[in-house]
Image (cartoon, rainbow, N blue to C red; front, side, top):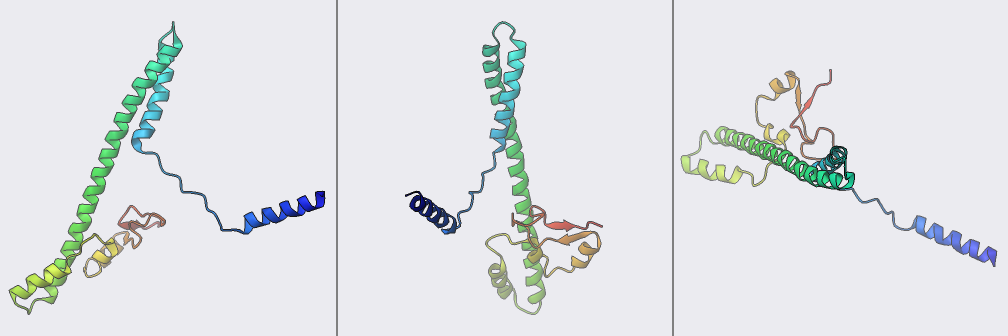
Length: 173
């Protein structure tokens, strides 16, 4: 009987191991508000317990609540600042793409008439921002950018690649 249960448990374990490869779920990052609230609550609770000598529990609770509120506010300010910077960067990327498209249209339509240029410009303008490497593809400033110490980052916006938040990769030498 022991042998049968051992074989069955071994077969069950092998079935579990060989079944579909399950991956761990990707952990969500904490928002700046949550981080600020936790840090503020811990700091405020400790400070409240130290300050209120007669009843440390009440002092800790009051300090924790006040600290959590203040920490949340600080985290919200940090989050708003980050969102504003991201929006400015997105607007800059769109402006660069539009300048590159205007340059393409201007260089390709030097011999065409004005109505044809307007229709070409409308057709070339993208609906969504593209990576910086594509925006500078038709620009003549690429050798100057590379020689000045910056290389265009083809992986801009891809979180699985290094330096995904920067349009340029920096030279490390």
